[in-house]
Image (cartoon, rainbow, N blue to C red):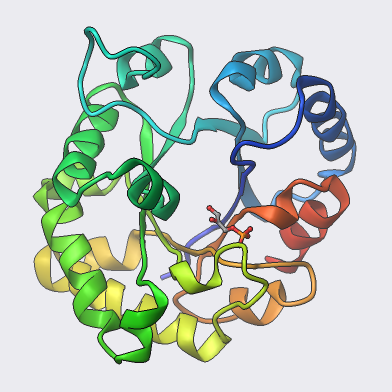
Length: 251
Ligand code: 13P
């Protein structure tokens, strides 16, 4: 089963509009290889500006979050319906920073997944354990619960449009990344859970990205793991040159 690699840039709350436009121009000029899909997740306010600026076809655009509700009195929130109406392609759901700083529960994340799919967005579902869980050797139990209580509420048809991102919390923004062995072990476990719940075919087709201090110098061995289908890149995606070299590492 060969899955096309996907390399995504999650800019989080970084870059001004001017810096974002410069980044896009540089990446557009140098992104000549088509071996991987590329998705850019800027702040909400720049998504459509950047989509308008971009002349190419390889980069798709996504939002870093969406509301669990369709519409209504939720000041400061952005709905999946609004993202869909603006032509956005992807949405990140359940990032650990949303779970930690904004109290997102597995139940809310389940609702967000449903909303995203209803409005024809491709969700990137994030899961991953904190350090104390990893130290206690309970990471599989922990991730399995995140899958069961959110992702596995989807039907087999729905899950076909989802990308999973394994992002161990202890590796996010810390400079410590999972070793290729640790990443492969968890990715294989997640794929096995998908196979058990749905089918071997679905498990073989779903893409599982690695996220957590993935950089130009460690991307290649991570992407070489059989169950690692690309990366969700935070800090190293802010620099166009570094991001381009991570895309090249997926070749
Ligand atoms: P870093 O690459 O900065 O560790 O962030 C990973 C991440 O959270 C991507 O969503």
